[in-house]
Amino acid sequence: MEDLQEETILECHWHEEPEFILVTGGRAMFQIGTQAYEVSAGEAVFVNSGEIHTAYQIGEESCSFAATVFGMSLLNSPSYDTVQASYLDPLLGRQVQLPVHLTRNQEWQAEILSLLEQIIHVNEDRGAAFELKTKAYLYLIISLMMEHVDHHPVSFTAASDKIERLKLVLGHIHQQYQQPLRLRDLAELINMSEGHFCRFFKSLTQKSPVDYINRYRTQQACRLLETTDRKIVDISLEVGFDSLSYFISVFKQHRGCTPSRYRKQVTTATPALITELMDVNS
Image (cartoon, rainbow, N blue to C red):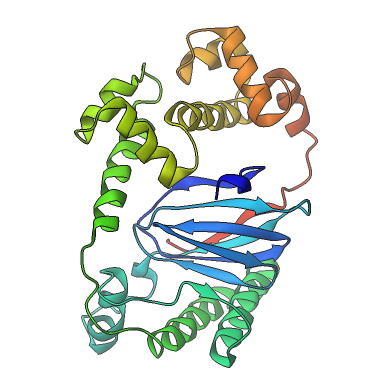
């Protein structure tokens, strides 16, 4: 995937809620765990609970997508029943291997894609009982997926160990990004030499550790620029940069403009093509 780094559209991350990502325009390479999937407009991927995922645009056409993130508590019954025991728990516990890349080549997958489009539609309109419809569509989607799973237990592999190690490092970065982060310390977290760690990290994220840290810090800076009127020098220190000039240089590299220009742009910006459509966790 070394030639697919022209634009990152989804930074490497994970969360406990399952997620469907429907590509609505362009093409992208999604990496979920250690597997890569080329996904075109009208197709989708399913990201299960706790799965590390990232995505890169393919080609010149802008890639857009809508993400449906849902907490399993939305689907659980008040009392423990057959639905939860037979279907929801195995799903959340990753005890079965669910389909990941959903295309229109098979009828049942095309039906899932249509249901995802309906979820998008009802949540854009927010008409009568849209929450109930969303829940019903999710049940239908999961029922279709559970009909086409490998019910053999998912075994712990060397790839699984790599992902768990990476999650440990990423979790540390996300919690400590405001503090100095040294490669030596990150490597020691997972008992690796610096050289081995850098190769390991890039093989799974397609970025060097320093680049990932700078991108994450830039993301946090963007949130502060969008939601506060704090001075740029204070924001740079807040997100972990000890040099204003270096912060501005990194920001321009990743956002294509200076922090002050970004702040001016977001006040008049139109909605981004890459959006998380809904979070029905609550």
